[in-house]
Image (cartoon, rainbow, N blue to C red; front, side, top):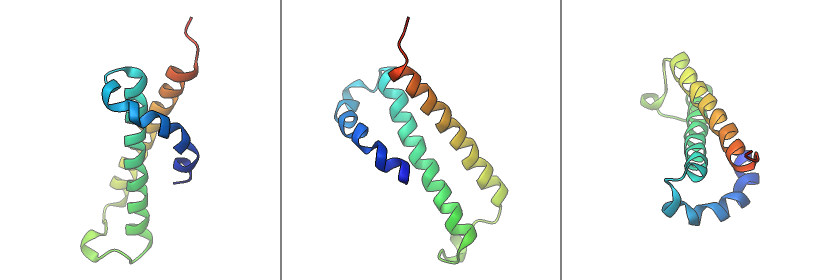
Length: 95
């Protein structure tokens, strides 16, 4: 969640332009990075709640921790790659 706070000013200028320009890689990379990053964050929080507390009812707790943790790890790696690609697309000058 802390990452969302310091990136919010960038998103404020970005979101209104998104629907009409989603087909351009410049915007599509950032939108995919944000969407998958949010899903990965929520997945990590769910695993934390399901594994470390008794706050969730028994039917919502997970039993196969390795499977879920590996899935979220793979998603984090994809988000990291998309973040690097977004940075390169936005800030690295083309020759």
